[in-house]
Image (cartoon, rainbow, N blue to C red; front, side, top):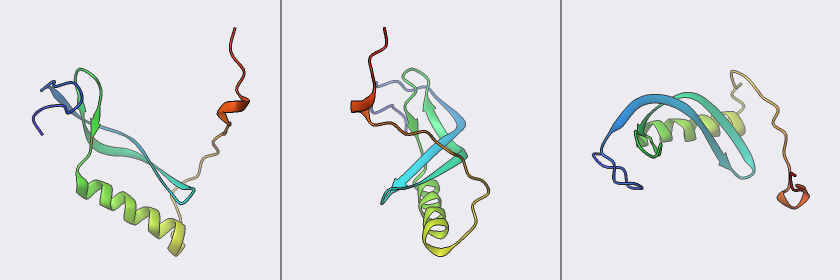
Length: 86
């Protein structure tokens, strides 16, 4: 990839980030995923092989009993229940 598909910038930084994979109402939060980030708008790009690894890990954990390295509790809220901030 030589150009950001969102802003047209050609400067990228190789870094790591968090990635949340969600399917069938289940989630997997993956830390330290290698990625390329646009130096202007911050859009993040991933190698397809890394996304396939995440998908396979999701399946192993949620459908085949593999133990995840950790778990987190995340609060949830329906948008309609959010009151405006004054």
